Image (cartoon, rainbow, N blue to C red; front, side, top):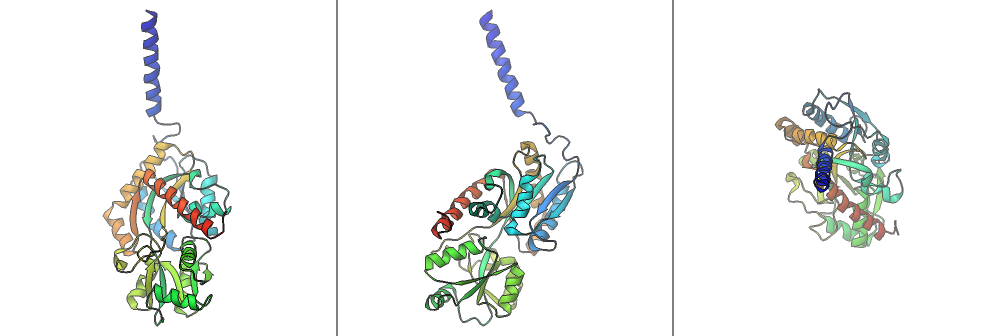
Length: 327
């Protein structure tokens, strides 16, 4: 009798544990959201990333339950670390999320520029889109391709000026790694935005610049700017014939942009948000709107997003070590 009761009690406890494990967590998605969700944008109003978020968020609202609404909060600056820090410091209750690129999560923490340690200090909800960045030349440039530019730079150290949007970000790091691999000395000129870099390039202030593909497409079609190499792994269809650094034997980078939340945000709320983002990115109307902006949609679930972030973190840390920035 005692043995039977003991087994029954043990079985009951096990079943109870299973029920608890599969039950919604406290503060979970049932009834969520009950108030507006703050979506932190690491860009100024009217900027490129801000425009993309403002294009996407109504469709995410539509696919969330309970008449969900978002309030966008613009926090530009410091290679997106101001915005990402705001997400880090927010309550993990599902009412704060943020848009983030890879630099504030896989580069800046290694440089000691953040209060958080890295991507591990966040919940990675889902990736939204990828981006390609190109080394671009102005109309009339004497260089036909990257090889000619690098050959000239080798003969004229520090004379070839290349504009980049920030320091130690997703543009600057692959450029520094290219210099190291090709054994050339380029003169990096830092601008506050890709729009400023484009203006400087068109105005003859610099010989080359690095800019996102969707920023330069209109000038490319007009014949005023010429992309010569993609510094990222992904390629848009409209630049499919232009080589990447990988094609030419150099190390490319990656740029993907996703949605993050404070560490500890309930898992079922994370799943609700991810499901709404996925459904939004499958809406024909949004697909068409982003295609017009030349945005490469690439939804990744949290596991895939985390895997990509881990891989890139190792790559970026290795580059910083090779450059002598880290020991």
